Image (tube, rainbow, N blue to C red):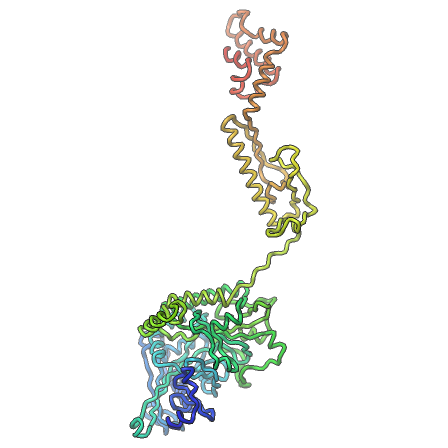
Length: 615
């Protein structure tokens, strides 16, 4: 099949969708850069088998910096050869296989428990082509055991991945649980295509670069919806051709229309996913990467249970069931666990989809990951951003500065796409607290509330707060009582403080031996201490002064006793003075226990204090 046949007889599906070198003719034969894809696949399998097998024959060593720059080149003539490197014969044209950083990628595979024999067993079995390549125009193949994706990449993407390898390796060593794509190999298939002299000369080299990555969406789980999200709104809607496909890939604006309220996750899963995405976006921004996407495969659990569960694509019955790769499921990557009460079926648990719900309560299983990370914000992208910013809002286009792209990407995911399930309020044993937001007519008064006089209101006031039984109190009532207690105690303390400044007070502190059950005291298991305060105000001073004035005007018998205490008899010696003082003190004690008051009141309020002072 030459170039004229491919372009004249075939249907160019890449012209409208910008699929690049991918073409399909009227018979359904697929070509990539005018080469049959079956030839590409079989030559790739042969080259990977030869590279991995030859690497295992060498002695293993730690990864060095020059290992990231190493390129292994192997020529595969059609008849095969024995020297200097033996290669098997094959039925294709001569080709050359380049393997980039073979030692480094071997360490990548070891970190995820991928043994060389298992890797070759997956690669050497027939691939399954994915018929929905998307807008990149790349070829996508899936291994028979559902472990790996084989994808063709552009030259600039391959070059960027080679420069990214040292930093990527450091990130993988530090954090294996990530939603970023895991690269396990980078290869270049090179073939010389001989064309007629009147066309392009003697021949043309075709370089097809291929990378091997982990598979995000399991093929044995039926995917009902698929989304490619970037957090931008400029031209982020699936076109008419994409909508007509059997399994279309929807975009940002389509998601907002189809799920305006987003997907609901439980609090732990939401937090784990948010932290993982935030960490991955920080890594991408550090490498000046932008224009990546968040892939979501939606499996509706209720819909699959009603209809016969048939896989989206046929699965090889001889393929091993358990996953050999560690951290290969979304739940493993975000370090989350299934809720035992809402645990899905066993096959969904093994698939590791993130459990979620829609706004109307439909159960979902989500398969997520970050894809297309090989776009660097270089000069070409900067110019693209500048030109598009003239036409539309620069904050909404996909090509923008990596730091801003990361922030917008995360905000869109966790403000629009993913949301936490609202936490239900705990059920109360006894509804003894006032519910905010409800009218008074809808609130009931519990039977255990009994009225109690309010000590802070005048006597006879009707508005008495209820008394709460402490045995049935709960945390919400304690909070309410605490606030009421703090308010009245602070109010009363301010009043008593102003009285102490003018008159004075006496304070007694003792430990209470019983538990308070007043509404104004916070119910607590601890035994609180009470402070009894006696304060004197100006009104009390006036009454006491009046009392002592009346006391001084008593009948003569009392007056005679008081006059006998004066030193009019002229007794000799100091002993008489002491005796008179003692008698005077006793007489004062008999007439009202005046000595119990402080010296301030004795000096200002009765005559006996003046007499004692004169003595």
